[in-house]
Image (cartoon, rainbow over all chains, first blue to last red; front, side, top):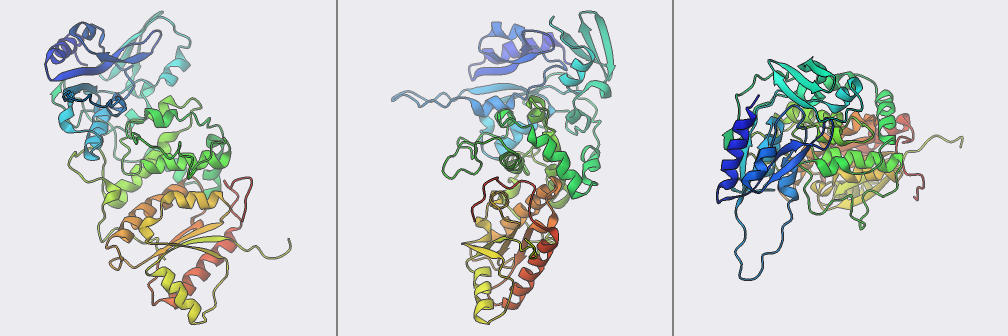
Length: 327
Length: 143
């Protein structure tokens, strides 16, 4: 658990530097358990920064979302860095974006925050629904404690953290220019127990499972918008010619959309679980991603988002890649 | 509708090997099932995995992607790239419950007319067993 005073002091020092234009962090949201992204542009802004088990959003998304305005004639382009607070999974997003040359390493200043697991708000709201007062949370010796209106509540980590945190193998930032707090113990296993139960079913049962889930998809594209790896300026979902995926909301187009979204993350997904968190109809999107993560690691022994120098998976090949499926 | 079910198969054939191989099968008067709708592409690496999803949406019961043998690609590495991509796409389709027989990939060179016949016969026979694709085709299908 990082000391908030230290974090804010570090943020103040960072934003006061001449080569930093903005610092992206978290602050308490307007009510309840919510937190929101916080863009620190002056040292005073840094007083609101927090880092707690409620800071669920992956801020790496904002690195590539920033508007790229044309530089006025005669003016120098702004080459100052963006500082960003990252958890373990967010840092992998930064690494993968650097590896894909979506951003330049020298354009970001990474402040690592080792993380013991983020609260899944759905699990929390099942226990304590409709909380309007602001709630604070912190990690305490492998447990998570919350200051709820009715008093303090302590939960074992496994009971309340998001599914992605239970399987997390990178709780400590993979890259960081500076780290706040102590490194934490890696608790996730390298196995894929979370999807094995679905894999062992037969094809009809698997389709029945996905049909029900995909049928409810609203095509709001939140999963794409929040994804730190979905940063193409032109997206097939908005292209009309060719219209890869039609706009109508039905099982055919929804399935095609979900397959396309999952496949575009093949060998790139860094398992931050943001897609599933923001899905308004609770489609288990991480299952699709995890399946591809599993295949990528088993077939090609590749882990995205750990080495900024690595060549992305699908732009390279090895002559002896597995080909037992080919006739 | 008492006749036997005949699947529609969309085949993406690479211009330099498989298309020529299929042509050879034709000029050698080798008989093979006529269920294929052949689309010639310049390389198997040209085939976007979304083509497969799109073909299934538009009424195909199965898809076959065929290219040069590894190492023989006209563009040096196109089929290697395709192989990685489709290994993953195949697993993904399988994971959402699309029958394994609906997506096939093969290496057929320009001199393998006989192999082409075997590949097509095998694919079509498997699809006859699997039946029509009912999972997520579009409502209105224009063949």
